Amino acid sequence: MLKVIKFGGTSLASAEQFRKVAAIVREDKSRRYVVASAPGKRFSSDTKVTDLLLSCYRLHRVRENFDEPFSCIRSRFEEICAELEIPFAFGEDFDRFYQEIKNGATEEYIASRGEHFNAKILAEFLQFPFLDTAEGIVFDENGVLMEEKTNENLALLLKNHTRAVLPGFYGATEKGEVRTFSRGGSDITGSLVARAAKADLYENWTDVSGLLMADPRIVSSPKAIECVTYRELRELSYMGANVLHEDAIFPVRREGIPINIRNTNDTAATGTMIVENAEKSAGIVTGIAGKKGFGAIYIEKGMMNRELGFGRRVLEVLENRKISFEHLPSGIDTMTVVLNRGDLVGHENELIRELQMAVQPDRIHLVENLCLIAVVGRGMINSPGTAARLFGALAKEKINIRMIDQGSSEMNIIVALEEQDYEKALKAIYAEFVPEEEN
Ligand code: ADP
Ligand code: ASP
Ligand code: MG
Image 1 (cartoon, rainbow, N blue to C red):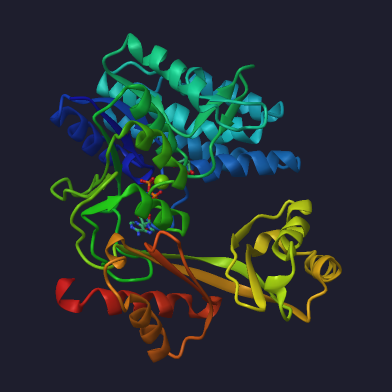
Image 2: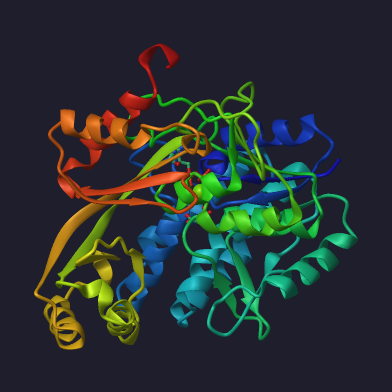
């Protein structure tokens, strides 16, 4: 049995958390490869080390002094070492790092050092070797992960070590330039290491007892999901249930390695198992997730369905502007394109004009400030009336639905709502599908 085990930022935010992590690793001899994040928040108003590092970069870029965030970072690491009674052996590394920032080190290199130093401390504390993922995880010149090459390199790196600590979040190009994943990317590192090690299980330890049925910052004490399929999780994490980075699923899924999300602060909870196929489903709905920050373009034209190439011409306008769409529901004479608002800001009018030229619609208008909520569940296929319950729950709260999209897998229903209704809607949907006595 071999387990790859990843700890998130809150799990490694302080010496006290390091002790819990060490106990978890030592408790099970099969927990052999440990992936570490940078120190996260110790309390809600705290700042993550990665954010402090990014502040250093941004301040220096505008030629401002970055000593304050830099010394915060240094003292966080010093404090952890002092409390763990291990030597702070990176004094010189820190001095060098300070100079590197001064000399114009890249944003991604600077951001990566939180994981780098934290993993070194954890390796020292556990008495495991430290293996640098800059030597295993390969990015191309555009910062895109080269997955097969990474798999080969990581396998080679791990081959001579039965146990090791590896830093999450970053790798390097073939020229040796450090590159990072997007935020939360240590989850991807854990998944890549699990694949390369041919692990039996990828344990992802965080600060909640698994994937919860809804965002705990909005719904109070949502139920934990016992078992979720990769496909359900993909939908949920894409839509904002970001307890696990949305790209962390692919490497392990390919090898059929299950993921277990666990809570560092509650080791008795069994957490969530993420698997390829789950026979029994706990209920109709597995989880609910959502995101703000969308816009939609409504296009209306009589008989558009008969007009050959209509959809293609619409999408071509977007493609030329390098905008991808999120959803594309259509009616007989209508088509709606749901987009990320960030892609629209500043050129809304030009985009509308280009679409007018391309397809000469009868009407076209843009709606901004939308949110999307996805209701996901493998049990939905066999449960007629789920959509009616969803719409009923929203109607009861007088929430106006701007768009509905049911995925072809019949495993999810997505609604677009006004952004201001987001929290209220999420609570209403949760209450509809999770009866109070189950909580
Ligand atoms: P880590 O630092 O361990 O990687 P993250 O902060 O990335 O942890 O992810 C865990 C957090 O995700 C939780 O503390 C919780 O606030 C948030 N979260 C959002 N949606 C969900 C959900 N559906 N289930 C569990 N956690 C969620
Ligand atoms: N430390 C990085 C971040 O804050 C990566 C991670 O935690 O997974 O995004
Ligand atoms: Mg995370």
